Image 1 (cartoon, one colour):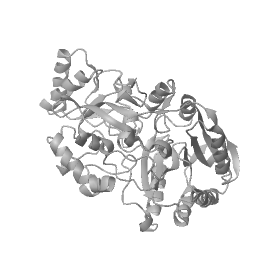
Image 2 (cartoon, helix red, strand yellow; image 1 turned 30 degrees about the vertical axis):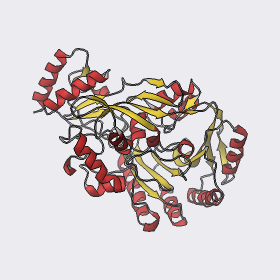
Image 3 (cartoon, helix red, strand yellow; image 1 turned 90 degrees about the vertical axis):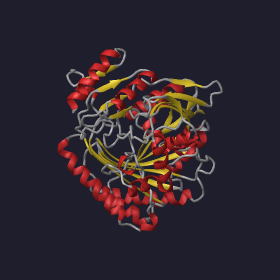
Image 4 (cartoon, one colour; image 1 turned 135 degrees about the vertical axis):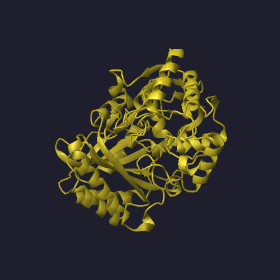
Length: 462
């Protein structure tokens, strides 16, 4: 079957010479199939590189009529590697990297293949910013569509809430503007209903930035972690400014395992930002503080030097209402066992009260204030990956055994470790009461499951 599909594809390409495509026989094939998680060994049928919406349209029509499965890739950071699939065509959207700022400077239309640092650099040049994640090489759209926690979440909200419009190629191959129903589904369930060409997003005025990391003495890392959270809980009772976003992290650096807090102050009131930086620094014994006035491009450049470009392994996640003593004690014990590899990490994202930044109509359901745990069971070599994955699983299992009333029913789809196809229970864990809305939208907009290998994969639920 694969050989016949490849022959059909080659005939199609002869009739559409403008569509670039990397075939398995090409010396570029191995490089083009590469994704962030190297544990994913799937070999796609080929990798297509469309450059226009019209090319995507004719590709979808051809693939549908020939029964050829396909995946879609932008940044290639999907944490289960689902942007490639054995025997399926990969449609690589990296050519769609445009940024068009509206005349009123309140929105921008961005291409589906743009990376986080490309978007932020383009906006910063115009005195603007928008919520993104901290890793520059991550594809913006995949990050935003499924939720989008990040260092600006407390100020402007999640990535999913920035999307105000979308253009996509639907199941028939038509280029369409998302209506209200489809847009709501895209906000949270991503590309399960079509191939996104571009999205319009909210942008915000920002000309200065105070950011960096505060590193704490981590010789007794469990105690450091627990003490920080107990003290943080006390100061947060009195309220935190929305311009302040904090992300707790435990990473493996040259000195060894260390607990730090990523500090982001997205406001031009720099003096007030330093006041809060000092307050956060007082929550432990500081060994290094890199917080400074900088720019988003420089901040991203620094982050790029700290994160491995590829890794082996997998991720786990939980969301908890509060960082209780039981939870911090459980995590603290796990941190003492953290494998010594740059790819093995732990971090905590917080979604605070969002009443000042009301959510857009979406199927993203985890809206109550909570802490989202990012348990990174990865390593930079295959030899170490198994140990890191086991550590991540053990940490996840320990947290799962804490007080169930403090655990949220919903989990973050972008970090969850689950085997597909998706069942209704899993879909409900991701989307809560919106699970049925997603299935209804899928049946209305893609009844033949043309986009069957996108995320979430819904084929067995139709």
